[in-house]
Length: 549
Image 1: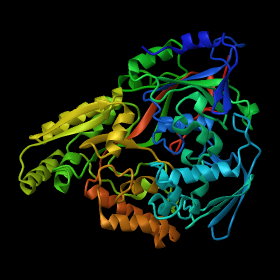
Image 2: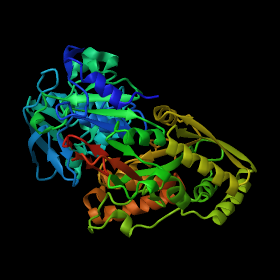
Image 3: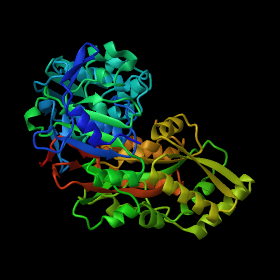
Image 4: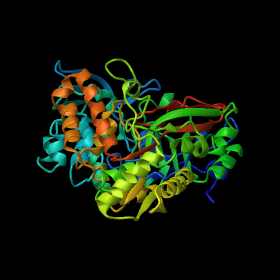
């Protein structure tokens, strides 16, 4: 059983301040939580999956990003209304053609006392695109338009040709290959966060694997962490440039995969924030501490098109149409999630017409069990097969397993002769398997990194790192390339319509099987104020939180 925060707080409250020798630097731990006004105020947060990595250029999952953003900051961040505001950047100038940015950096420090400089950003961005790093998010540097990013990531140019340079310690120059209207919001994404090169090189392979191998320049710093650990502790970073505005003493993340156990911990006072699932959402819907949040996460099945049978478009269509999505959101999840008959979710991207992308877009692959059977018969004829058996990778959280079991039952019932075996594993293991193409079906998700449909649609271009299933379509690739850096990139209205065409292509070919757009049903203690909820990029931001006595 996971250690409760109540026990942890009692232990931490009597600890003396101590130092952790951090690769030539240091983190300082203060104290834990408590229930009296004199005790440190620690925000106790429930998460249902482990943080896979705290390396900003390596992390790929929302939990890791959330923790990273608690101890690191980049040039810009996003406020609760979705508006970018400067962090390590103090000001900037942009060229008239949108192809050059000059950032002036504020006086900020790393937690070991080193100044945060322009060189830290140069090193970090080069690290992200360096093929030797093998960052899955290398592509986002190109998405931001940074000159030569794609060529470097592909191994065609030297890393030092990236369009970023330090004019001096406090002046950062960024050159773009094409104008990017969402450039500033992108700067809040963890892949763009700085890294202290000297510290990184001293740590070597240990970098970001434990507190002594981490530096902070943000509101908190890590005092307890191991990869795939069941808890993470952070304390207020006194060297943070805005430390006076951080009004709590730390964060405690607790991994609890069983929703019933999470609820007991919340009711016992061991958690300030807990995520509900299934029946819990209904039971607590009238509770004054119930907080429904519409997230941007799309959950879908990714078929590996290189596996026998799954390269057949009619078999994929049959599977995508064969399960009842309404039953999943209404009877299993019950957390405000909505049916996804699309590849680009709602309520996160606004077009040139001022309307939400989904408001003027079609829907696709709506549940249709009769049509699914027709496609299945066609697929059997085309493939010369009557039976199919596939394994589906699923992370070992309660909600994911419940959804997977339902999907298995529906597909097997509505497509007789097709069987699904569920393989349950930690999220990081599932991701590693899918990244290595070592899978047949994968129940997975994606959340928007920035407020544009491209944050989803460029996942599935040929050869993309996150195109786990190797789906490919030449027309689709052509549209996305033009919308990113070609003629469409400078014609907002035409670009928007072309992105709709691209979505129609992948949906028609069932390159993925969309299931639902995630809603989060949260319980938040009434004493807690100031949490920022985001549907794009970072899910939650805690640096402005207050906890009443």
